[in-house]
Image (cartoon, rainbow, N blue to C red; front, side):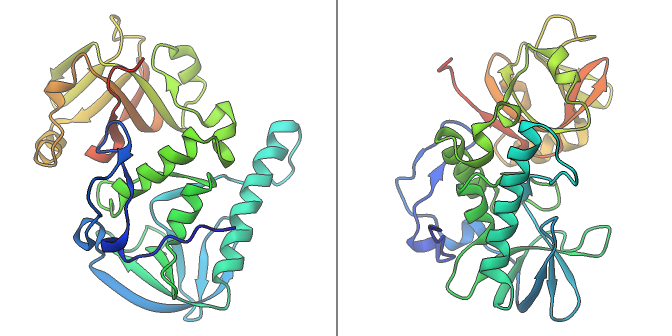
Length: 278
């Protein structure tokens, strides 16, 4: 049964990661902590198998901030079938909760993607936050873009709880955070959205880039790369890159190859502080 997540944030208490250890919030979240600039009503008429919604107006909507599991057209093997079952569960939830019903689109930052689809958080008339339901049930992962980061603090908290309780996709090792020290394994995840955990050995500034190195050999070890132009906005939001040296962190993004495996970071919400419990 769905545990409804209401949009009345003043009455809610979330598990707060503060981009570090999740813990129960001492004070309720306020509306200003996750407040959309634009809100508009809409009627959902269809949910496609990739999770995109169609509205009565004919417009398409992509759920911002969550990445559901993709379905295999012809699944072969145990894992593919398991992942298809999770993907189908997410789509069934969306169809059951949304098709034929009035909803509210909450938008902030960039409101359309390159395919002219609306980017929005979806709330039902009774206040259920659809992205929150997907995350708390382990049916999606949270992710953000530099120009669209609404509600990421809350989404990361819900994802963390689902991961700790091994719900949905978090039952499977392929989705779990990967150790930064296993660079060969990370290279096999090239072009995939991946969570990586490890301790920053060194922070280096080279020309227009800030590099967080996780090993002694920058030519082969895992690295986080941030353009210098993003350093100041990240610091204004409370993340000082220079202070990450020696700290354990988790980063999320798409693995690329730049000497060794690398994830490029553009905003604070891609990085979480983990402390020294391991």
